[in-house]
Length: 347
Image (cartoon, rainbow, N blue to C red; front, top):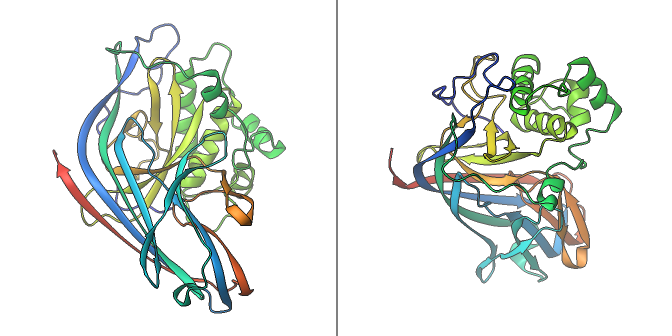
């Protein structure tokens, strides 16, 4: 994941020390304001010069339907000698049961022996989000026990039971105090990560919380993995969202951030990497409608047909794929192309 530009935001909820203090909070709610509808198109061309394939299984994201990324539609296609063939919408087998697009193509196609080309088109209506004081007109229903469990559990990525994670949380006082309000605590975590965890796109190993804390830095995805892990360790439902920049027709790239579920309010965004000011409050509870949702959380479980049950970290930036054939798949080459089209803009 990488960033483009810097978002600007208005600090509407007036975050300040004690703003979420105990016993004095009015109720909160999120205001959603329609920004625009956009389409994000992407194409990947993979080449494996030492491989001769007879069978490909490929899986790609389907844009999730979220309160701020609505009316989501996705499609994907594989280029074959007979033309473009569509993927099928399926469900991943993890607890999240997320939609994805997959194709199981068992043909000795000359065009696919040395690699493959796939393309996706993702479309959604994007909304600004803003956390405000005051009772909501209609409270958001609570999470069901099953939903709550899936947003609390440890996974390969969110390994908050690992000793190094627990020690880091002890050292940085990342445990919720007995009398501390949930919102106050999460705001404290937000400030801690913004100020004390360096943003860097250097290679830091696997996208796993314990590994990220071991190296001590990370880009947006790694930041969101750490914050999600901290919140889940404190029994606060949390998740990572990965999205695609869709500001205008020149947008490129992707971005990750975190969301937590606040009772009666819903999923609240926070972002510990955007902006140059590390002490900025502009990215807590507020998110501009400039990103189209691509994927929620990591650790996907995929039924890959004759390839068996597969586990992958994610299918947002690149597809997951498996092949049967001769040779090896070393020294792969991947060329990718993206384009954005704003369909309806109300800004």
